[in-house]
Length: 184
Image (cartoon, rainbow, N blue to C red; front, side, top):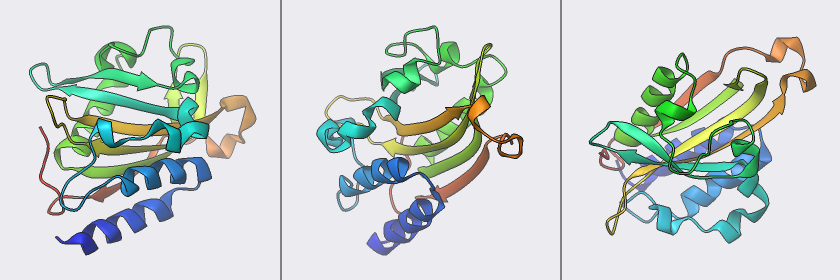
């Protein structure tokens, strides 16, 4: 697939996103894509995302363990867990019943590669629930870096939403297979 392939997949991805903040995060990822390669963590420019850093997060992939480890998360993300994000494995951050789905989603974003947009119930903890949207995009590893995933999650506490908006997270996938090589 050519540059037209990435533009088509990305346009469909962007059109599925309701949140202006998440659209801006996604557009930054697209802006740092170079022809024929996915962005690496070093391509992401925090200054370009300054006002959205509280909702941004990233994981590195650990191929030997087939798990992801927290790299960075804004305070809106770290505030929903009693564990530190940076350096903690996805398997330790996510509740046992949510981890398998989170791992499958993260693997697909990275390995296919694909763009992900979800909306609905985007997080649950023992004490609270968050309803909103999430975007996840693949990152290529270069210069000794691990490959990984980059995303953002915007949510409101459950009390701020109508009951009809509390559905399980609806998943939307936008494949980049054939546009970029699969990542490991």
